[in-house]
Image 1 (cartoon, rainbow, N blue to C red):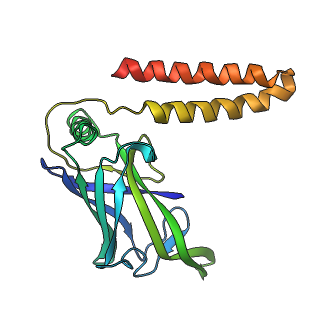
Image 2 (image 1 turned 30 degrees about the vertical axis):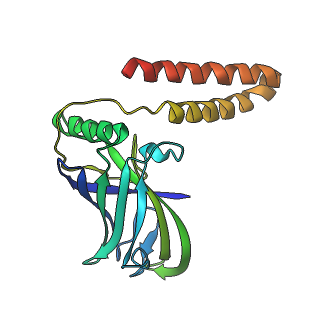
Image 3 (image 1 turned 135 degrees about the vertical axis):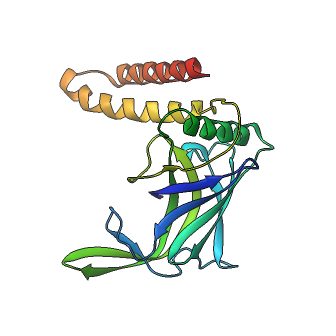
Length: 212
């Protein structure tokens, strides 16, 4: 799965919003640009995808999004499911983020490249994405690009969404990678590495519980 950033333009009290994904003709910071129809090839001139917390495919979806092209832009109409606790929590969290100082919440979307080509533009090798399968949009700690964020949303109180599974998975992977590099130099056994990994995960979960 590939990941790129996007910008949320608005979100209302009913949990409906709009996201700006990409200007089709522009070359982004990854050296990619988009052919017309890259997002709108599906039935009805677009494609549906899920909204997930932090790209966590094991989590309950927060809602869904309809992605299409309009006036040279790829855009998405967002629909948070406020009948679920997860959807309500993220709706409230986004409102809190906007109300308290400079917004820090960022967003990105996951996709698979179904068709692409390469071109030379002004001496630069550019990948032209011709057909993308976008399967999810996520609020994340940091987006995959610059300038992503929530621009407007309305609601009331804050509750932290439960991301224990995400923290556990990321903590385990990061600690495992770090300890693998140290193992050879120290002569540490595999069992000791596993113990250190488990300790790192428990610390991450404890920090998550402290925010709840």
